Structures are given as C-alpha cells and as structure tokens.
Image (tube, rainbow, N blue to C red; front, top):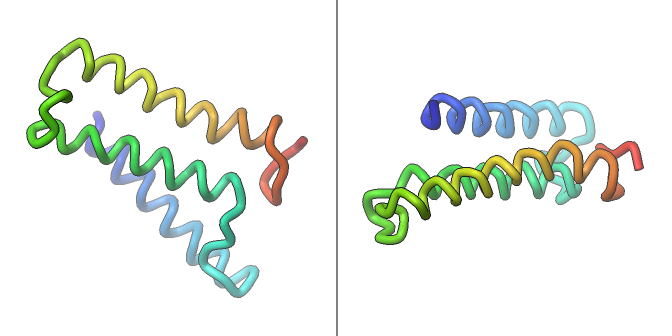
Amino acid sequence: MLYPALFLLTAGIFIGAVWANISWGRYWGWDPKEVWALITMLVYSATLHSGSIKAMRRPMFFHIYCIVAFLTVLITYFGVNFILGGMHSYA
C-alpha cells in the first residue's frame, strides 16, 4: 500500500504545481500547505529506503515511524487548514 500511496501523493503534488503555475504563474510558493505536503512526501519516501537505513530494519522502529508518517498527513490536512495561516487555510 505504501508504494501506490507515495506515487499518488507525489503525482498530486506535481499536478498541483502545474495547476498553480497556470493559475498564479508560479509552480511553488512555499505556502504552509505546500511545505507540509513536501514534508509528508519526504517522510513517506524514507520508508521506501528501509533496506538501506539500518534503523528501519527493526520492526518496532518501522511501525512507530509509519505512525509518525501518518501524523504528518494529519498535520498537512488539519494542522494547516485550521491552525496555521496561509493561502490554503481556514484559520
């Protein structure tokens, strides 16, 4: 499930960047929503390298890391929308 989810997240970020370029004339604006989407993508992409990262080979660490990775998704949605300010927020 991790591979297709990361692929769809990455594709969504790139499609959103193309849409932003058409709408606002720039691909990336460093808005909090964009930054947290990038952080989420980077955190999830680290789990793909579990063979080369020694700590990821331990099952307990890997499961805790996956929970933290899911928390980045929640921060991207709830934290940015309702707590942080920016173009994509309701705060």
